[in-house]
Amino acid sequence: MPGHWLLKTEPATYSFDQLEKDGRTTWDGVRNNLALMHLRAMKVGDQVLVYHSGAAKAVVGIAKVAAAAYPDPAHADPKLSVIDLTPVRRLKHAVNLAQIRAEPALAEMPLIKMTRLSVMPVTSDQWKKLLALTEG
Image (tube, rainbow, N blue to C red; front, side):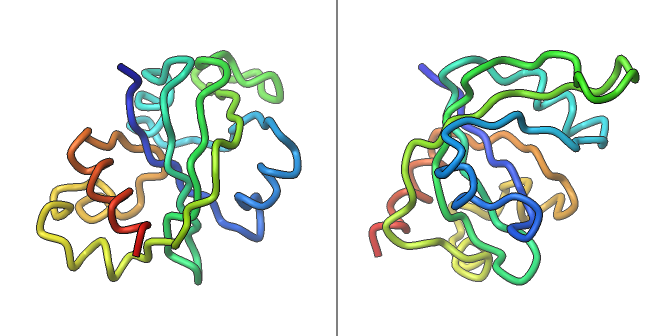
């Protein structure tokens, strides 16, 4: 069974639209130690919710881990890792942060509890609830 994750991105820097256009990307720029630990735990085939931060504040799409963590080729720092992602699909309806906060079943998500974290696990139950919200 694949793992479930949420990755935050500033859409002005790299959006889900760009991921769809590119077809595959190297997910880099993660510096926080806990976020790096989560990034390194991802496996090929794991499913990822892509969350637009900044003004959007919404889960907008689903991606899949195409390559597990490997050293960031753009930096000599051995602690930095990246993964490769491919798009799966855009959500039927984006799920904004207010909707997520309003759902008691999602109250324990790191998205709510650790607001600055850019890479986080999502439980199977949270994944199912978020996908149910995308159906409107």
